Amino acid sequence: MSKTICPCGTNKEFNACCNRYISGAEVAPTAEALMRSRYTAYTLNDEAYLRATWDERTCPHERITDGGGTKWLGLEVKKHTAQEKEAMVEFVARYKIGGKAHRLHEKSRFVKFDGKWFYVDGIYE
Image 1 (tube, rainbow, N blue to C red):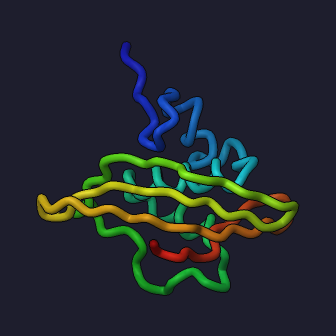
Image 2: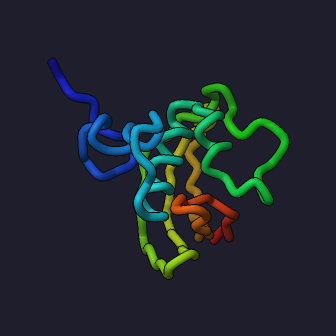
C-alpha cells in the first residue's frame, strides 16, 4: 500500500505530517507547522479547518475555499521567525486557476492564544 506524501512540501507522509493537525488529533506546535497544515487544508478545500485556525478578529465572513477551482502545485517556506506569542512565516505557494499558473508570495502573521497558533493576516510580496 503506497503512502500519500503531504502536499505541504516536507516530503513526509500525510498522516505523520499535516493530517495530525487537520484531523484535530494534535495542535500545531509552531506557526510554521500551522501554516503548512493550512496550505494542505487549501489543497483539500477544508473550509472548517481554515476557519478554526484563523484569528476570529480577521477571519472573513465569505467562503475561504473555492470548491476545487484552484489546483495547488507546491509550497516553499522561505523564513519562520517566532517569539512567545507572535510569529511570521514567509512562503511561496504555486497554483493554477483555469490552467493559468500563479505564485503567491506572502509574509503571514500568526498569534498564539491559549496554547494554539492562529493565522492573523498576510502581506503579499
